[in-house]
Image 1 (tube, rainbow, N blue to C red):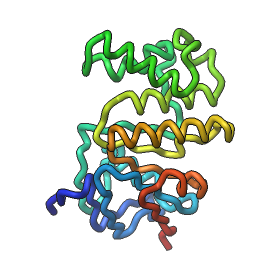
Image 2 (cartoon, one colour; image 1 turned 120 degrees about the vertical axis):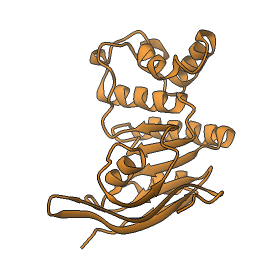
Image 3 (cartoon, one colour; image 1 turned 90 degrees about the vertical axis):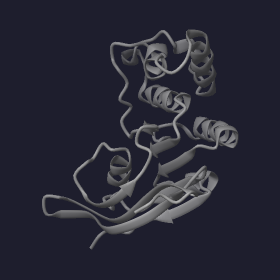
Image 4 (cartoon, rainbow, N blue to C red; image 1 turned 90 degrees about the horizontal axis):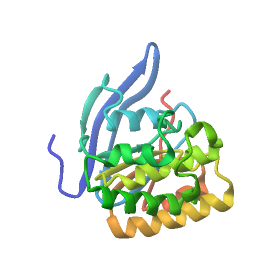
Length: 205
């Protein structure tokens, strides 16, 4: 199975089960380069499992998956911040091997400003609310210049006003860097605002 030029990820006949529970069965899909593909569907239909397989977190499955797994950012449903590092240091942790200190500082400040957390950059995660931690995770993933960005319910827990502001900023950023995005959400309004391509995953019977 060869990766075609206009696709970032190709999946064919993907199957995944947890014990006797079948999550994905003969699932095939292509993800177009430089586009935002939004995946919706009922709970338990395999949306997060699909992201984990694409991101090489879940490695036990059958079928074919071709993806650039060495150039991926991932916004998980959980924040996954390093508790002993400040907000600034959490973002610097994924950047420090890829750019100069001056460039890194500018990038971190840019994205902390985007999620309205500049004044909290020297705080530890334990001093932040749940919504603030979510915003740090968003800033960290956006700051790392991956070719593929995986987003699993990225705006969950944010109030509507802040969510819309971050979505607006994200769409502006996407026009600039044109990375490939695969986003999972239950929110059809989010899907319609963000998606170049929207698809719904059915439950496996």
